[in-house]
Amino acid sequence: MTTQTSPPTTGRTALTGVRVFDGQELSAPRTVVIDGSVIGTDPAGARIVDAGGAVLLPGLIDAHIHLNGLDTLEQLCSWGVTTGLDMATWPPALVSSLRGVDGLTDIRSPGIPVIGPAGPHAHFGMPAEAVVPDWEAAGRFVSARVVEGADYIKIVLEAPGDGGPDPVVAGAVVEAAHRHGKPVVAHASSRGAYALALEAGADIVTHIPNGEPLGDDMVARMLAGRRVAVPPLSMMQALAALHGSADAFAAASDSVAALYRAGVPVLAGTDAALQPGLPQLVVHGESLHHELELLVAAGLSTVDALRAATVLPARHFGLGDRGAVEPGLRADLVLVDDDPLTDIRATRTIERIWCGGVEHTPAPALRSTTPPAATDRTTSA
Image (cartoon, rainbow, N blue to C red; front, side):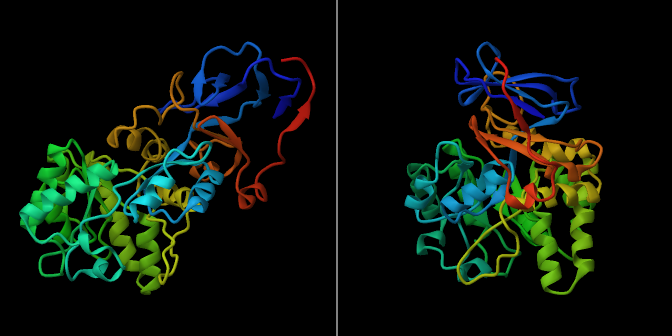
């Protein structure tokens, strides 16, 4: 790969000789123009980067993370994760401070989630208002999140009797969210919680049970209800290892396979988090590449694994300005040396990253294992 470094006459960069992943296959080598923060069409006066047949992916989207601070955005970006869908962060001021940071990973967030009075998440130090006691309080909770700028509403469900939100409250939260035009993401890590998520009408279900298969009935209900699954296999694998139960993770992987075979949309999410007092089981950025590998191991094709981290989360979370390499969309791009359609591990061979049009080099761990960086040559653009 070579770069023409004569001064450009515009703020554009033209990537020549790139094979573009279009959501189904790789294109023949062609030119993609980065024009400020968006993908453009006119290469005139641009800085030229000759990619020499490298593969250009849309910026990757992690559909389940938790924010910690600016360092979260920097780490995600350095691994080619240009959009992070947060699944619970507080206080609101922290979330606001991480929105729209120029040149770094873009985020969406529900802010504070709904939890039950006695479930595991009641011990995570969440604000008292996260516990919603009744139908009327559900409406007030959702309205407050909407005022804070929540992009969707998150509810943490447990199996009946395990301390989660009351089913009536869960239904009220979903109803109130839908009145405000907000989708609902339900955390469900057991069959009982999954059933409650479906009964309540949640749009997206995140997590997948370890140790117990979802079963054909639950998979059929997910499909019939046009629900979307975000099963963070990286976290489920880490939890199984923590508890010394590899067989438990096998059940989670099998459930993902069943959802995929049935035609339920499966999105790539990791549940990466860094929270005081808790072990960091899944790290930001690198884990999404591992997640893609786990999805392929579960039975997804390499094409569908890539779609799970690009076009599908963009579609199902209403992010119409990203998820593909097309003119007018955000210039969120990842240039990799090898072909991830042949081997999904090739997503790790990152040469360059553009986050909202701002160019970045990959994480040091990637630079130590990928081919040498592009050499410069001076010719006119």
